[in-house]
Amino acid sequence: MNLNPAHLWAEMGVINKMVTLSLAVMLIWSVAVFVERLLAFSRSTRESRAFAQQAAPLMDEWNLEALGALADRHSASALARLFGAMVKRYDAAVEGLAEGLTPVELARNEGERRKEQIGADLRRGMSTLATFGSIAPFVGLLGTVMGIITAFQGISSAGGGLQAVSGGIAEALIETAIGLMVAIPAVLFYNYLSGRIATIELALGRSAGELLDEMENRYGRVTGTRAKQAA
Image (tube, rainbow, N blue to C red):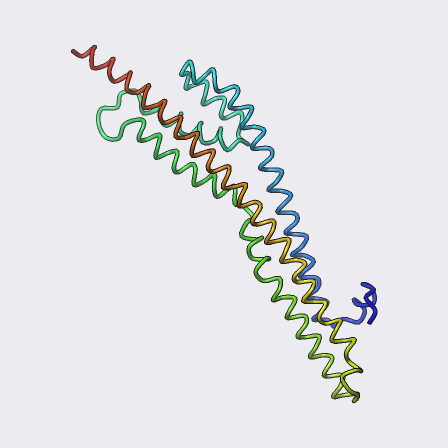
């Protein structure tokens, strides 16, 4: 059997060529998703570090307006998007609230909604990797089955024994190998990116909790001052 790619391609039937092209598209697509997610995570991490450094003095001053504006300038940062949404919701509710949910509770609810949105953005393309990792072996197996069917049709039409078509069967089995070569990287990419996403979400949850603690503290001071003034 000649394992030269050009020879294998020339010997393939139409269906096997379609299967091979499909697997090639899956592989290229998987690599593209992986690289795009890596670049997006890297940019978000870089922006988040810059945002955190600039936000620290604003947090000490409790300058919420400036903090919200700073978050808008770091739109690529998951941390900035979360902080910006929570701070703006808190700041809008802290003045003149007579009843209902407190500004801190409103900020907490806004933070939960924003974390869900950020999580969906972080997982963009992940379903593609999961799908390719699941179906690529079966697509390759389909190519193998079709190749074997074609090989045995050659026996029935031209005669001869199994030895006459063993090369065709071996070439057909290559389709399964190609399917595995697509599925294995897709699964590895998916698991690696899932770990990165879990780390990012854990950090966001911890940061949101620290911000809420500060809001509780600051809002307690505001309400205490107002109570003294009213008395």
